[in-house]
Image 1 (cartoon, helix red, strand yellow):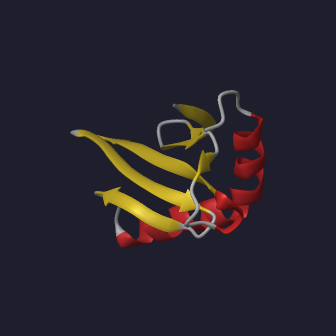
Image 2 (cartoon, rainbow, N blue to C red):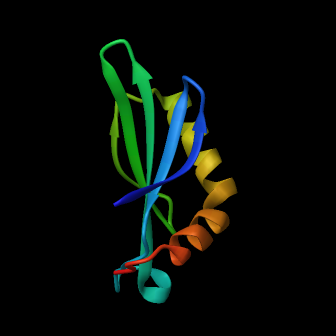
Image 3 (cartoon, rainbow, N blue to C red):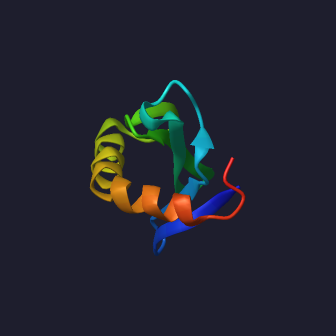
Length: 91
């Protein structure tokens, strides 16, 4: 399940998952962060993991938009992790 984090009107929506147990990550947990932006034909989508800021996939974001997404993600990662830890049903 994804939870809303931020929405910029007509522009970009950011959602995040609950904390997911994963021994491949420091502290044994990760959170998926999803970026979505409407287009004339649907949506641009990208997903990243925190910690580590690894791109899981990127569908149609330009390199400059991707750079902007990563900057947003890095600035907001501590708060997103805190929010994710507060969600019910942690895996």
